Image 1 (cartoon, rainbow, N blue to C red):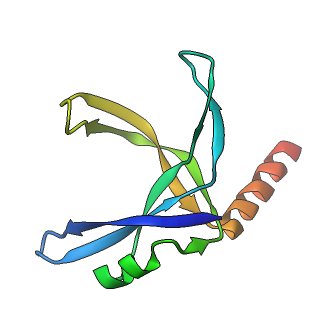
Image 2: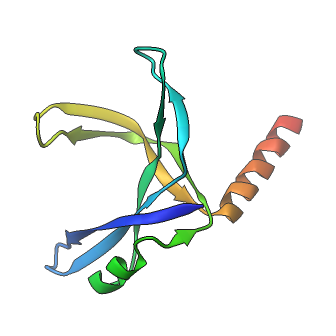
Image 3: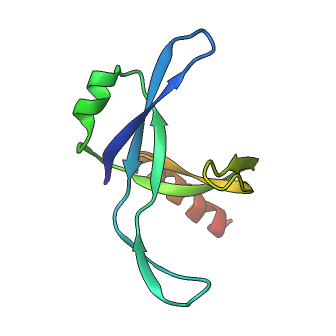
Length: 114
């Protein structure tokens, strides 16, 4: 289950505006690579929508069946707006419905059998 925690507005090339919803997964315990200590976090992802701003605001707090999963993507650069540091990433978090996750798990199991 994920929760809609916010939304973000973007301007399109034609001057119009569209909104994406920011969803957050459940609590996860992660071990720090640097210190070896456990810390808690929750993955977030942005999902495009067709909603207007008022609808996006009203949806904050709503829960949706699914998970947030890290997937491999073509490398892309991200510039930290505070430090100016440029980082290259090859993974990103995406929202996956429960049905998609079940299908993907079944395909993976079939690949293991073959």
